[in-house]
Structures are given as structure tokens and as C-alpha cells.
Amino acid sequence: METQLAELRRLAAGAENRRTETGIPRVAMVQGEIPEHMLAAVYEPMVNLILTGSKTMTVGDRTFEYDPATYFVMSVDLPAVGSVHASAEGKPYLAVSLTLHPPVVADLVADLPPSVCAGLDNSGFSVAPVTEELLDAWVRMLRLMDRPDEVAVLAPAYEREILFRVLQGPLGWMLRDIASPDTAISRVGVAINWIRQNFSKPLRVETLAEMAALSDSAFHRHFKAVTALSPIQYQKRIRLLHARSRLLAGEGNATSVALGVGYESPNQFSREYARHFGLPPSKDVALLRGAG
View 1 (tube, rainbow, N blue to C red):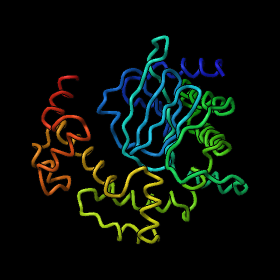
View 2 (cartoon, rainbow, N blue to C red):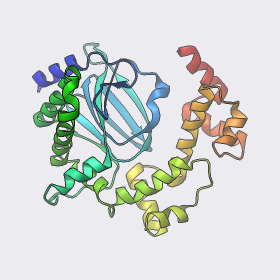
View 3 (cartoon, helix red, strand yellow):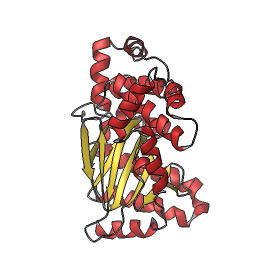
View 4 (tube, one colour):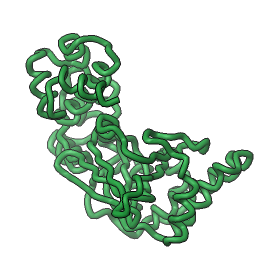
């Protein structure tokens, strides 16, 4: 696997310390020290492969660490906090990711026999050991960065191969659940999409449960299992992340931003902001702006 990783590192060497597009649909890369506020974000469904260094990802009360021996799968949009670390030799963090596109996943799953493996839980994110077959597929995908004329023809095939290798592994059930409307992940995903689009509106768990076609208790249980957060906690994280982005962009003061993201009390907003990000809004934004 070291030979494959070495080639992947060479191919991704042009990545910057932010999301860097590759010219291949849904494939991106990143390298170096990433600003902390960029790692506290809503992460979209993806397969993430680290090539150098390591990363810690925390969602709710669950934390995972992964490195070049493992890969990470996230099957729903989740507010998470990450931290990246250089390798033991001091080489900068380097990673590539493939954003999951449900129609592509569903089309692939439809061509495969029914899964014989059930997931151990309903979590929407987890880590698994990397395989040579998965790395091989990634090598072919990233080689297309040097062959842009071949992207339109070959990238879809390599994307299917990457997804196929994930489907073969211990996290394959996550992809199958994305493709099936009757799974906990898919049903919770309906509610997650509503919250993300309507985060400033009052949230009624009963309404979300009805959207997901679940009883109130079953919905709450599945939502917590998938996201490691309650629906209210999920909405709160989304509101705080939007508020931070607006403050950094200079789109108002703490009071106006708090009201704009759905808080009725600016004081409550400031308390919850400080609890989540470690500093009150004004100090946090000043620190981030001063850092870069």
C-alpha cells in the first residue's frame, strides 16, 4: 500500500490549505494547516481518505481519529469539529475526498446483489481500514488530474469503483442506506434537509417525525443514532455555524445576527456561542480575523 500512497501523495501535492478542486467532479483535496474555523463546519456526505498525517473528527459526543491506514465515510450532512495533524516526520496533512451523490450511489447499488451484511448501528459516520483495492481506484481517479481530456469518460467509472470498494467494506451498509428510502439514515436525512434549509424557523420534533414517517420516539432515537445529536442540538449547531460565518463576513453585529439565525434572545445566543466556540462572538471573530 505504500507504493499507492506515495503516488497519491505525488498526485495531490498541489493541494492548498483549503478545499482545492481537482477538475474531477465531486473530487477535492486539501493540504497543510487548515484554519480552525474552517474545520468547524457542516460536512457534506463524503468518502475521505488521508494520505499524510491524521485527523480527528468530533460529531456530537463521538470522536474518531483516522490516518493513512483508514478512511472515513459520512452519509448525511453533519455539523462537526475537526483537527488535523502533521505526520510523525513533520510532513503536512494531506487528504482527498469524494462527495457522495445519491443518484450515483443508488444507480450502483441497483446493479449489485442485495447486501448480506447489516450495519452494526445506524450511525451516519464512521472509520474503516483502507484496502489496496480502494487505493488502486483512488490512484486511477487522481491520475485524471493530468489527463483532463479523459475526465468526462473515465471519472464516472472510477467514481463507481471507489464506491464499489466502499460497498464491499464494513461501511458499505451506509451507502446502501443512502440508496434506500426506508432506512433510518434516509428517513432522518429528510429531516436534516429541512433543518438545514429552515434553520432559523422554530423546530417541532413532531413535524419532523411526520416528515420521516416515524413515531416521535422512534424519530428521536434514530436521529440521535445517525447524527450523535438530538434534533434541537443539531439545529443549534447549524445556527451557530451560520452565525459565525455571517459575523466573519461582516453581515451585522452579534444582536442582528443572533436574530437572523433564529435566536429570540441575544444573551442566550452569546452564551451558547461562547460555550460552543470557546469565546464570545466579538472576541472569537476578532481572533479569527487577526489570524488570517
